[in-house]
Length: 318
Image (cartoon, rainbow, N blue to C red; front, side):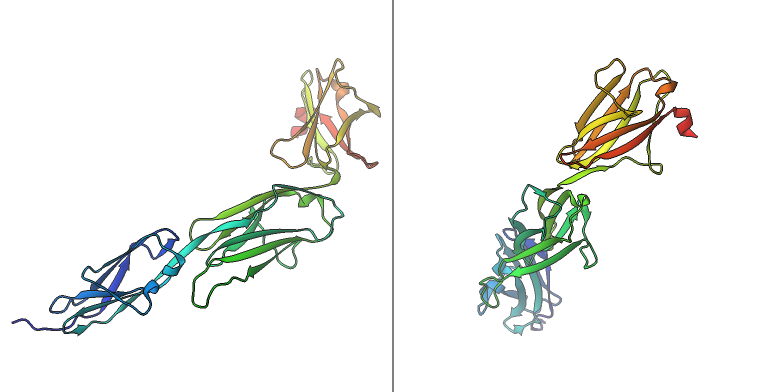
């Protein structure tokens, strides 16, 4: 004896609950009790509000998704006895962010420049969240920071109830005055829920007089060489524009290309406005030990002197 009954509670599973625009997913509807006669399934989808599509298969396949496919998907099991209890599944369709106004590739700032701000614009759905980085490290940008971050959303002509792409703009403002440490590689990265990010980067340089980057102990830098070896004394400077170097010993300038002295000055690859001048002293002897002065300048009357003391390696190790 077959007892006729309507289906019970429906349940929906999906291959993906969050997909990107252009992607797809498959929804499967089952009923805890398929009823008698066995249930068929009726789907109501966001892109077909006010209508329903009946199909024998309990599977609903979505391909080439658009933002209009966002929302609730309802499955109702039914037979000629009546409807079961519907199940509701919320699908999120994301438009991955894209940068719509990129940062300039390179920018040179004067130290007395005011109101310096970087702006980064991204578009997507949901609204992209933009994070700033300096030299690969996230910037917090609080009110007490030298760098301050603000954001705004640009209005769109999206009809009420529709899902539309949204533009977000983030601003990175530098407090005044600028310092040479504001130079760096800056990036904005936009994301909105998927592991698909959009990024734009810029290199900032700040005009500044030479700044010594050598470690000091506590005021002078150190170098070491064994007697008879070639001593290598390194002067490490940050400056823009490019500095000129001279080396002094006992108040006299050392000339390059002599019998014992060789001077090489280079820009450091991969470093912003960083330079090295290297003084090599061939066949170093006892009287070569002591202080050397590395003097750098870059177009103004200000000169930066660094005293580097050459010692024996055994003395430096103590």
